[in-house]
Image (tube, rainbow, N blue to C red; front, top):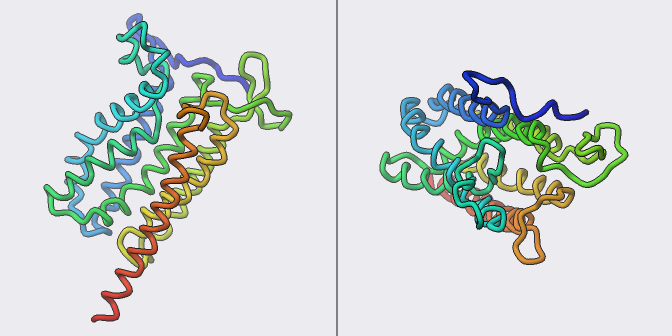
Length: 251
């Protein structure tokens, strides 16, 4: 399988990129699903629209900033290229960090439970990641090392691991798993902590196959961050579970 190219179609002499289409579709899908599910978490659905007006641009900016910081040599001689995201160059970890920080502020301002909001949003985020990863396929980026496996993709005449596909499939399964837990979660924050553990676990191993990893010295920064998030999410899971159990016993 070979990418048909990054351009979906042209309009008025302007190329419309698959990457942008898929990123937009992923955001819209996540917003719609979160809006429909908001009442299950005792959250006003209208707040999802209020949140999305801020979190979309901030997440994109965070994802771009994160990528640029760890790939500065690509931009140091052409500062304006920093703003050209049509050809790719978004790091999901940066988007999650920026979006997560704004959610903390939003919850305090709106008096919304942060664990409940995270449980609501993160299954949809997983689905958005599943959709958005296909932008890497059309851009022929974020692929892995050489492979002889039948599902390999051809990039520059070489068959390589479709790491975008591995993550897309994993995130789709993660969406269904986390969604199935909404009505049977045992405590607030459970779904969010499981997302942190399971997504980071997949990212750690898939990142090891990639040829374009962002580096922190001799280490792949995504793997280091994944290990940190696994430890943080596991600790959070244990803490929130004990806190919930303690409250139930007191009652």
